[in-house]
Length: 164
Image 1 (cartoon, helix red, strand yellow):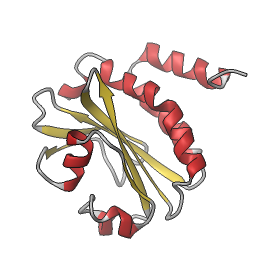
Image 2 (image 1 turned 30 degrees about the horizontal axis):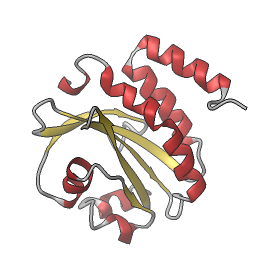
Image 3 (image 1 turned 90 degrees about the vertical axis):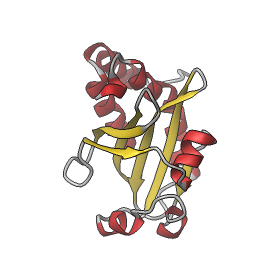
């Protein structure tokens, strides 16, 4: 038995050789193939830890690349950046304590979210964020996502990725 599907490993290797956009696209394809997961986004933390910005997305119409959100003392930043722990909201009610835009996300058709900090050498460099149907974040889906987190962290090793 192999730790990673050999075809997936080949695609990831090719993506790594190409650049961060290719790697994000490969990981987004993996994640959105999971039952009930319909979008993946990637946020980078600025080198001075002052802002976050979306550097990749599988849903450019609703969740476009770009823009900046300040790092603040809100629940999302405290959990992700301070505690370095994931946010898993499998229902809109479970999302609301961390995501002020929950009603907007629900209006777009998203009823669950998972935001995972990607920590390198003790620092949160960015996040992978999944959105999907209410109830989609089953133990099986969470295990699949956990299995690719070390690969997702590689996005934030590309020079200048957090400066975009």
